[in-house]
Image (cartoon, rainbow, N blue to C red; front, side, top):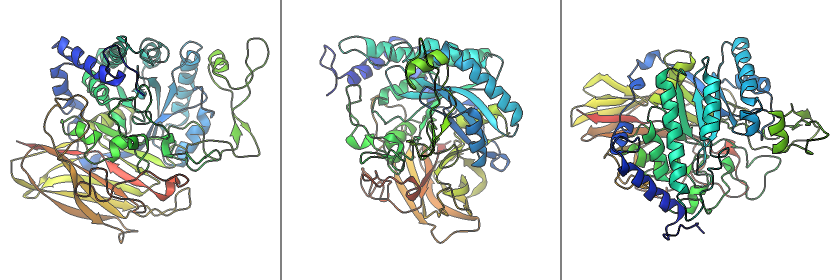
Length: 555
């Protein structure tokens, strides 16, 4: 049952009303009408580069080490595994805690990261933070390296973290919901100010596992991006913890991504029960054609998706959490109090038996491919901000390229995150280049792409209802079987009709093992990803890829 304010509104309904009130209160506020318009504009960093000149790098932006209270691996171990699985860029995003902020964890981690940058010049290593967004879920905060980067992260953690500041659970019948939302907006705005002032080279924020608890309401998602659309750029299209259904501690209720919840007191009442389950390993907000992600894209928002490992505990790993000191002032075992005293967990200890864990190594299963103009930290963040990204599970394909072009002017093209601008009535086509995977993944499977789907929607402008979460005009417009194409690289060209209004196209594909009619009907999505049944959560047997959209603009 939802908690209620004295007005009788559910907590999440009250929050939406509060957000609207903040919006109306000030025309210059980052929550005002001007902010919604800015969020729908392509950021300056998204100037279209030559697709042929891009470097496609694998980036895992969400990883935890011993500097998080619930993880167990040394940074060197994680980096060794990341390089083993072909990761080019990685971010350590430790949880906010007193041990991280006030006992030196953030600075000790920074020293290790700096040493790793020297020792591994071919790996781009970021320091970040997993932010407890006030009144909501977690978020990835990324900053570019620089002399003040660590200080900025720590200041942000202390001043804006929902957990450290007790802004996580709004009390019913109070203004907490609106106040906490404003703290989140202020934090995003503050990061943007540090970026503009040159205190840091760059900063980005993404919402993590947005449907896991149902506490990221549609209105909050919009408010966060409206605060600074150059900083807040999207959410995880799929969560980490993909092996929760294939682990030593798996139970009958285990679900991929640890999406094992049901609506709670702080959940948004509008989310259906299926929103709390992953669909083909992807978050409900991403997986439903015409759903939440498309609702944001249909406003014209540059809202991007990613994938990552969210590494804490590797499935079937045989090491356990190391031993904290004993004696006066120390608890028994791996407690939060011990972590906050030490500022980190001890290095893990080998055991003879597999331990519990829901995660896979960075790059082993979940991959975000970013099209960077150079192999630098700032170029990676630029690529993320520009939406030049596609994601896959299980190494479904080795490489993917997507461009949209005018049929009568094939030099007029746009790639992921960009905008193809054409006269009204122009006929367009989608060009998809695929390099199949030719080696077996770590599960011993040789991945085979079975199909590619083109999804198309209209851009209709800012939503009048800040909690809207559907895009009625979005649907799958092309289903293309490619199961007979393996081994050699291939290209398919898909006619996409004419451009008669602003819109977007995006591409999806899978191994074809599991699919069914989507929740909005067969005419919208006839082969949608599905939640898995209890005991059937082997992630390697249901793999998908998604691209970010290419926008279509009538000039």
